[in-house]
Amino acid sequence: MSVTVLIGAQWGDEGKGKVSCYLSRKAAITARYSGGHNAGHTVIISGKKFKLHLIPSGVFYEETLALLGNGMVIDPEALFQEIQMLQDSGYPCKNIKISPLAHLIFPFHREIDVLMEKTRGKNAIGTTRKGIGPAYSDKAERSGIRICDLLDKKIFKEKLLSNLQTKRERYPALNGVLNIRHFADFPERYGEKLAPYMSDTSKIIQDALKSKRPVICEGAQGTMLDLDFGTYPFVTSSDVTAGAVATGLGIPPQEIKKVIGITKAYTTRVGAGDFPTEEKGKVGTFLREHGCEYGTTTGRPRRCGWIDGVILKYGKKINGYSGMVVTKLDVLTGLNEIKFCEAYNYQGNILKEFPYNPKIFHEAEPVYRSFKGWGRDIREIKRRRDLPKACQKFLDFLEEFTETPIDLISVGEERDQVIQS
Ligand code: IMP
Image (cartoon, rainbow, N blue to C red; front, side):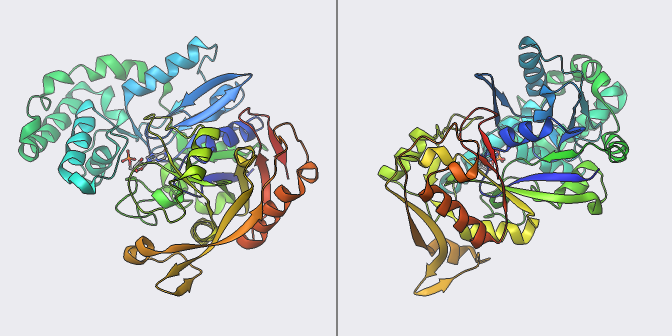
């Protein structure tokens, strides 16, 4: 069977967790391929809310493997907290497999993240302060420490000493933190606990591809936070787009047969950076309150605004969406007017494509198409044709505009409040 990739089509928080959980029921594997516990994937099962940061949503099904791929950065403390939370709720987590090639996040990475944000001053990115950027920097610098290094105390110590030496020179303000004695016991503290979960995740996927059940790759963050294609520098520090699946999991690109772009029926963004369709007034407040738009990882209020068709099309170009999922459609219920950004106006010129020049994006003003809203509660609707007419028109336009079929529509918080389109 082939690989399906779920990609955030906006700035993250599109509801990938819920969609992944819904699709994982029949899957052999759900796998994360990038990022770390900066992600926050919320899944609600029978009224109980789970906030997953590292573990993919397939963990809820005994028959599905939940893989953490080599492209991730993993904070072992956060990982074991998440495992504990799941085990306390009756999920044994025996289906979790972790790539020994994934890189570790240490507490000093978090400290560096905080320090760098302070140093950036008014240009701060608004990171989640989880140490993601500093850990990926170590990986690129070839000084990173991987999960497999925890299995050999001598190697671990050598690598850590050398890593810390450079860090002390670079960040004298953190000298107190950058001392090996704080981390020397990591092999005992985490290595032994991690050993049973370590596996050749690339091989597991290759083997699963011979079976008939799908492999779901659960993207983290969103296309516009991608290190290359996002709104740099206000992005995360990993590749999040479909291309990253092959390198983040060790699977041949030709195995990827479906790429599903997940978009909210509106847009949100956390942290700094341009956001042309942002609504700072009543509409923004309506969306934030109705959509509970507060960060799963940091609790920060999310910036809210109208759906942006220009970035959806841009994401399609980069990721090659074969289908879309529209989430949080129910949040729009009660608005008299709904807007859809179909182009940008830059100094009187109409731009139909996402501009690569950040200065242009900064000054771009949205050109909207207006839709009538609806008042009827749609959360229990199971067929697209039963949705209010105004709602159907909005969805039809989204499909036509992006030239992509909508496969699924999420109309409520619960895992099963979904319309197969
Ligand atoms: P970092 O990934 O913690 O370095 O943060 C970089 C940027 O990505 C910040 O603007 C964060 O708010 C944003 N970000 C990182 N992960 C997520 C996510 O899962 N959802 C939404 N925004 C995210």
